[in-house]
Amino acid sequence: MSLIRSVTGRPGTALIPLILVAFVAILAACTPSHDQSTFDTAGPIAKQQADLFIFIFWVAVAIFILVEGALIYSVFRYRSRPDDKIPRQVHGNTRLEITWTIVPAFVLLAIAVPTVKAIYDHATPPTDRGEPLEIVAIGHQWWFEFRYPSLEIVTANELHIPTDRPIVVTLQSQDVIHSFWIPKLAGKLDMVPLNDNVFWFLAERPGMFYGQCAEFCGVAHAHMRFRVFASPEEEFGQWVTAMRTPPDAPEPDSPAALGRTTFLANCSMCHSVDSYRSGGYGDEIAAQDLRWDTLVEQREESPIVSGPNLTHLATRNALAAGVVPLTEENLLKWIQNPASIKHGTRMQANAAVYKTSNNHVDLTDEELGNVVAYLLSLEPGEGGPAEAIPPSESGEPDAARGEALFAANGCSGCHSLGDDMLVGPGLKGVAVRAATRVTGLSADEYLYQSIREPAAFAAEGYTAGVMLKFPSLTDGDIADLIEYLKTLE
Ligand code: CUA
Image (cartoon, rainbow, N blue to C red):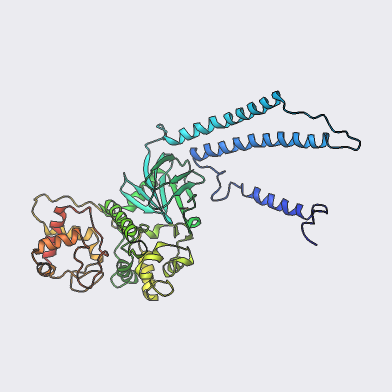
């Protein structure tokens, strides 16, 4: 027997339980305990939005009951009976028509007043709830970049904020329209390319809150998530210090050390891991801009694309823009074949290391395991925050200061001080070689160019573009670095 009977029979009673089940399922979506529920609000913006929703909901319920009640009453009261004659025909009722025009106008007004008030309240942060913290959130296909301009911190997919302080977010997008939404805290507001939107929110209680891109932005839209970690001011301060603390260097020849070399050779063009250093913030922004420009210019052929910053990755909670928990197993699976966790990543589409017959990563199992070991070693080390190196006082090139800059900028990750090749050439005797490279350029000039514009003269056997620029280095810094390099005989 068919579930829904033919139009000539009675409506299928079997349909009623189905409708009831669907109704209960829909009601269950209203549970405040869900991670993305808008009912369990944790801040004034989300609360105002939820209150507005509940107010409009009950207004709609009242109207629904009135209108449907009148309808049902009329249907029964005035239904056709045997012996009925044709009723008196009427056309128009001025009083009734004026009433049903004015009443809805008042209903709309009642909804518009609190709505417009909420829009204005959301635009400017309150002045009596602490100093606002500015954050820039940038949407990328398909992950979120978070910059803290006043703290010079940059991170991805996990936003840390202090509680009880307004967070002023500037929303940007690098590619298509995304939307920023933290159901329990605030949202939604679109992230539009070339048109910044600004709004604020505040977390009144500590905790982890789920965020989600709320505007269809391509194949992995549903997998474009983020997490917000709200903690009291003191704990937030500890996070800020941790983000400026370099990780401990891996033990020589350990899997993490070997993994670092593989990572720097294959992944570091798109992923920064050293934004803890002084000047690292500006360098990362410059690198992201360069990555984006290169992608725009070269499209599918582009060897570099904007990638999430991986500084202190091991301290994060989730992987692949909040899709799976960060575990060794998931990280291995992710690097091996990103599509097994999330379709469509630019990493798999563009990075040279994925140009294989099945688009799996072109690394041996051992290399892959080493890279995972390296990434999971990226957490604040024992050494305390990275200090800015004070400017040179003498004005003369200073080899000792150059050595400190060499260490602080992580140059040794790619360049050995001997003649063995890591990611880049070994630097033993580099000053002698530099003098012979380009006719008309002295060693100093050649080394200056190689640091300032690394792509200009990639040494034979090395790919241009692997070495990133370090715009935070001043000409004085580079002079000191060159002075140091000259001592490597
Ligand atoms: Cu980004 Cu949807």
